[in-house]
Length: 459
Ligand code: ARG
Image: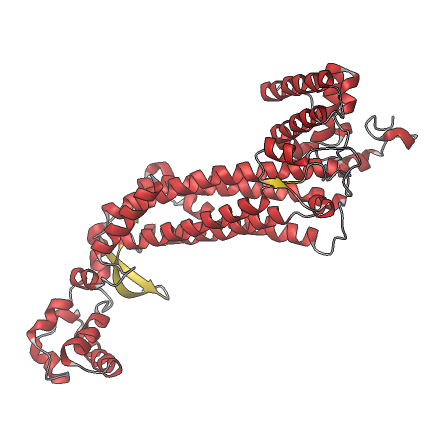
């Protein structure tokens, strides 16, 4: 049997394998709510414009509402022979209300329909992600406020560099997530134009009101070019690239959690709720959630580059290639949502080992820069010279196997005679972090102020 929605000129139905490669209902059924909302707006507009009878529009809208409840109740039967969500809904509508259902597709095509549905879906998803990202920022900022003065080693090249505070480190991620949210917000603003009414590719001869449907669906305005409307998926790409960048941030944080919770480092403890045991080694507490957050960026970046390859070189306007926009995007966006939720859970439960952090912060001559800065500030040495003198003092301490503040004044004076007792005031980690008061620096009072600023903004 040929397809009852478009099979007028066909004598036979598709080969089984044709149906298999062609059908998208297996995944695009996720768009049901957006598809129904779009159809309701379209039918209402058609009636207002006198293109269909008001009584037909009423039947269509009521039928669509019934279908919505059937799908939500799980009693709707999706059929692969009907290809996609659009035709599954329309076919059921015909079953429910009879011939008026046939008027719904006036002045539209599945090409503008799917573009509209997917924009609505991506927009809804961005809104949910934004709420989740704000929640993660809140979790980080709250922990940062509690640990504004908890000193830990700061690293460059993963080598101990200078002491920072745990709160400062966490707040770095609050900033990153703030920019991630900004990228999603930008993508949302650009995608919020309505393709509905572009029809197959050229617009329509019916006197439709695209501004009305755009408004009914919460779009800012209709898209201005019918060819562009049905043939671009840049809104998906932009959202996926924002998702990939955000996932990269989460992946870096996760890697730090993995490092910090390793017994070799042991700066941080995760809760039982966010770790797993080993089936053979009873002592193990594995940071699986962190490892998975670290890894899942692969699927998200993959979805982005996959769709970029699909779109590359595709002549205008719609081509079935574009049906490949959905599965990767659905997977990537729900994966990101899961990553954010798991990260927020880990952050809320994580407990830093303050004593170990403090000890680690002071090891590795982490206050050497403070010594060099003191030589510049108090003795007036040029920084390069101060760097050299400090290097020699570090070598002396290292040769004796002691920390900088364990050297005697006399020992230091052998290298730079003008050094005074006052120098010991800058050599402790607490003094070091407290002195980093430049805007954006790690001083506890700065960290407190930044955490409070964010918490106020996050509400
Ligand atoms: N399932 C299709 C997609 O996702 C809907 C649009 C189909 N349009 C067409 N002309 N065959 O792209």
